[in-house]
Image 1 (cartoon, rainbow, N blue to C red):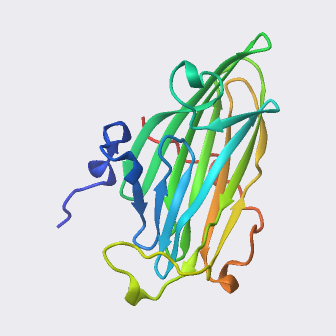
Image 2 (cartoon, helix red, strand yellow):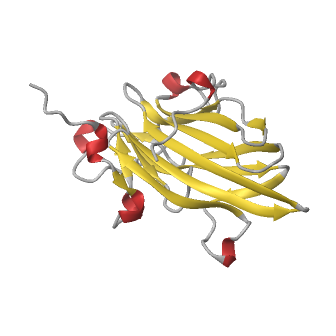
Length: 228
């Protein structure tokens, strides 16, 4: 007899998290860590026997040709400088986050809503990051993503050396690869653009190199919108 539980029964609002620097999600195969204070950042990935504790994926945005960082400080100090994180929802299989960019520039308002979904891979090491950008302004806006993968020192660690705390590889002996769909789009007023980034963690022979071929666009042209 079914227990009647759903993933939503275990969901919680990230704004209520008491340890935001310890926000992890797992597929049962891979665990990935959401970078605190960002909408899209990821830092740390484990998929036994592979460990990449000091790895990171960050995303900078180009908005009409001007750079905008992810994770600016709230208040006047960060106003108009980049993407302001607004919270999100943790579920056992994913982390949904959202943020906003809102700026008067050259006599026009540029206003964007950005959502991301971090999903650890199952059956292989790594994770997928889906990003959705909604143009709330009244004019078309050119958007480009500038992802940066810092692999750190990923390594293969024998399972016998994994304990309560994940291990630190003694030397680089694994590879992380960044794959992605198209990274730029012209978003019409009231329109939406979707981007998909994938990070793979594994053996040199199994993963390949520093950057692999492009991923196909997400089904339906957009990531599944995170629940309100």
